[in-house]
Length: 188
Length: 188
Image (cartoon, rainbow over the protein chains, first blue to last red):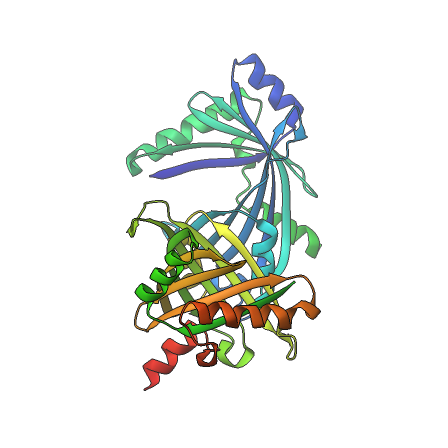
């Protein structure tokens, strides 16, 4: 499985309008609040690991519903720099606050929070995600998963063309994660 | 809330027979597999903390059903030696194996496993638990929660009397946890 993904800065209202005009389908909307932790015994920035609790609420008409789901995710160090392979382990948890307290007890400290409202659209075989990230600009991600490495180039070309039809320019691609962008903004 | 609890070595078949004769009700039966972890940055034995994943399966006619539930629990250091107060945080998790992989990735290593079959009986206002612990003898725990410290002595006397009626001797009380008993047995 290979993931083709391009993220660009965007005006979400304009992109939403183009998606509607193109007959794209709005699939889902959620608010995600991600807390990233520092470890007491390692520098995750150096080891390239991450530990995250995600709290997620479905949005209905832009309003949060009361069904919060929480997930804990660990991303291990890159095993292979070329393919960006890394171990990733994840499970749903009943109570995000309780797991936060477990981690705090063990000496892990919340280091950064990324909060975003995401709208997921289905368009031309891609998932198009409209992201309003607290403290950052608006972004659009376009994404498709392909089964073989030989399909990656064609999928990427199709993604560039789809972005173009939505009035977006793949040349403005941002490769930094939202966490990275927030940390960079905090350093300014 | 005060918990009055006495644990004694017992013959479970004999105790079960006495409970039946006394008209006690068997409430539930479960197999619990507890994995305790060592930390990469602290000696839990010295700090008196514990990190545990419990995997639990309801037993029906002594057979495991397929609904495994998993829980993660962190027990903090004793805050007050007299009252044995400590912070405890716990949450259910969807996938015990995934959380084990998260902890392993972070450098926490499984240090000990306690596996037991537990039958819970309701008797005379107490919960009586029949525990068959893998690698140890059989034990019975009798337990009641009271709301005020002034009720503790009376509840303890009632527990001693109830144990006596079940053919068990409170003077044989074992205060060590099953984990402690297993680690002590391994040291022999």
